[in-house]
Length: 293
Image (cartoon, rainbow, N blue to C red; front, side):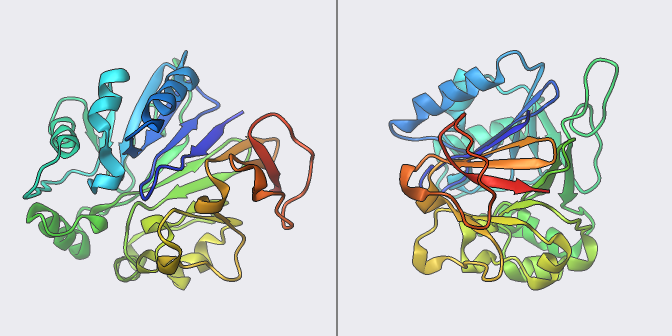
């Protein structure tokens, strides 16, 4: 049974996927304070026994890479999936320096639209695929090239974010969009293949500046949009779509099984969602309902 976890880590992002196959994926990193120890211990526990553990870095903003050096020390990163870039910063943090070390080292695998790799999206006799596909970037796209130049100049990093889609054998699918900005998403619309996706993690932590364009939403047709931890005054609430807001729900967990997605929150008072079916699950955290696919 695949498990997808989205952690409450302040204004940043951090996720993991415990695949139904022999794979475990961590997406982004925001480790600081007291929570970093228990969170990494959970990663160690949940990834135990998995033959492939990969880290996917959407982009090098600090709230997506903080504590990367700590994670690498505690759980040595062997597979670092990253957009090829030359991002610089005038004030280099320890975490950014470590990001650059991994980005430019022999553990890096440079992802782009349509790339193939065992066992990201290719199976073998040894193990099955993870079910992850990279939808963006298109390295020949002029808007992406401009974003790379901004990152290299150290002025802006949001729009070098990758877009990744994970599909399970149960039929559920999930999408990560990093911190892509609305105008950029509109600009690349004709150069990205968008499929219907069950659950989308809203870009830029749900901020209005990263509002998913209607042109994207019309193709993605999400059943749930997860809104991140940006201050409420900056959030776009996706009227007309079912949403889970991380600031209220806390850590969010999705488990998929037999054409269903069971949804959980770590905040006791978040409660059942009226638009989900109540199957009275009690196996983890606080159950908020089940989505039938």
